[in-house]
Image 1 (cartoon, rainbow, N blue to C red):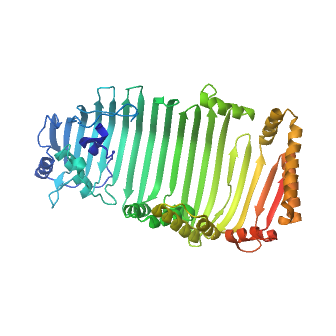
Image 2: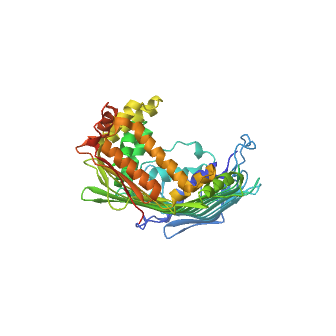
Image 3: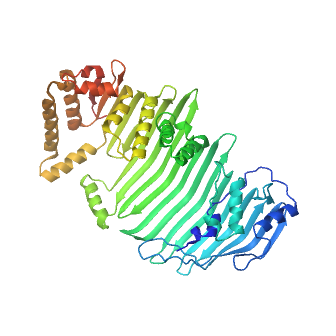
Length: 532
């Protein structure tokens, strides 16, 4: 069944909204504007397709008021029950627009319609079964010739243009934005999708783009396990590299998976600044099936300084809880309560410096994960060889995608072998998780918490004994002493590795597989610190 968003008119509305970018508007005469408007079939009101109260040329713009798009009935098979839980249908209805504006409409030398900007405001539509759509504003600034022609064709031939195959360029517009969008489906229970605003704009000179979306919401009473709510306060990306994204789109369009993966792996492993300078996500909330998952914010920044990329990530309060009154949530809530928790809250900080030319990435400053009133994990690392690793992984994934085969273990290990570990360490600090865990074990087994700790320490010694000569005696002594101290007294335990000479992951695998492995070469250390 044809919906508004899939109708010929909606192909136009789909464009999302844009506001002006501040560039000087092209000067056009009334005759130029009238010719363009006539080419779109808007020189007169058409009661059966597009009608309006008035259309006038003023200060370089052509403005229409009280526009009505008449949506044709669809002859296709109706949607069967259960096929589409959210089916907003406006067939045979009307889309109302309070004002529609073309800035500097004109005909190009090839006879196609051009304009500097296009906007709509005050959009609304109602369906027969309680559906509703509203949009405060929709605007497109700086469309290129192909994009403008596509929009013009939607007006000139409503109901036919959706079958046209339009080829859009790499940068089809300067800016696109929308505000106040909402769709409601009241049939079989209310479902609402709304969006406060969305903006996508780019700067050709800098090859950078910016994206922002605010107040996104999906809410329904018709989920499989009860009501569902998904909300997002803001997501914003600054300094988005259109050069990189154009590479991706071109590679995907040409079915060049190898090229796409090479570019993607480069951005992901050694040069995140080639993708964006800042990413912000805030006020995320997911509630469904007795689960409540929310995120206050996560911010990532990438800055190029003297050939190095300084990258930082801060995640503030990832919250998880379960509803004990819900069938699914009750089991999870019970599991949390065994450890004395009604909720879990996670925070994280990461700081990494990348050297793209060298293929090196190493941590700097604070790098940790914290689960409130449970534990903290601090880590550091210095690894290089990412350029070769990225190339091998890109080839591996591309081959798997093109040939429909899973990546072979040998090829994956070959890629990992390219990485050289200069330093690595991880420190786990107890912040009550040990008391909680041993308390839960004691309750289940009907013993005292001290006995549960003793059992855990005994397992450590048993594991050490089974390792035999594979682990040097001094290192084994460090390991058993540190872990036993941590289990019995809390505090923290640190595992570090600083190879005595350049050592790749491939070298490590060879060392471990030897009958008498040279573990000392890896520079592994284990230590414990008492609670402060």
